[in-house]
Length: 203
Image 1 (cartoon, helix red, strand yellow):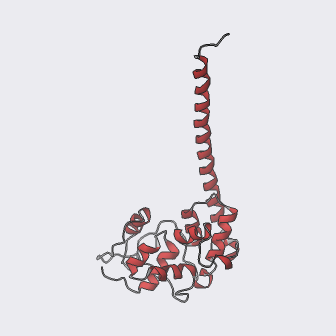
Image 2: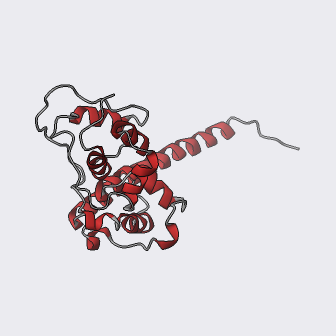
């Protein structure tokens, strides 16, 4: 596969703006997976400005969407001279100076808003699912130095975006709880009917 132009810059953008896995990004950019993880953690490529592969014509948004929906899928470099395409709603580019704050923001979101999904957190602070899982499970390589901090205060997202994500997660949780409660209620309603038919035991 042809390597994308400026692979490190492309990897930076993909990490900050998509929910692709480290493996998907590493294979597309022909980088080592540990390099990609280092970029996500802010220890590699800290001075590299991300390059949008959809603007340069290397990828289409449809291709990004396809691979984000299927972690096993692999990105295919387009051969067409694709011009700028409209992005779906997602995280904005994270300034280099703030990239190192992402783990702290993730830890804060995991602690204070456990109802948020990995995808929601990924979109809010521009990170990847493996990084989020590492912090959730406390297996992140730098977990001892991570201090939970509000992502809004860190400038990684706006308060409105955070509020919308929390509200959406709460609504989904309520619907799931209501569905579970309804199912449990149906099971309880069936029990009296079963016992009512049982013959009465007399001495």
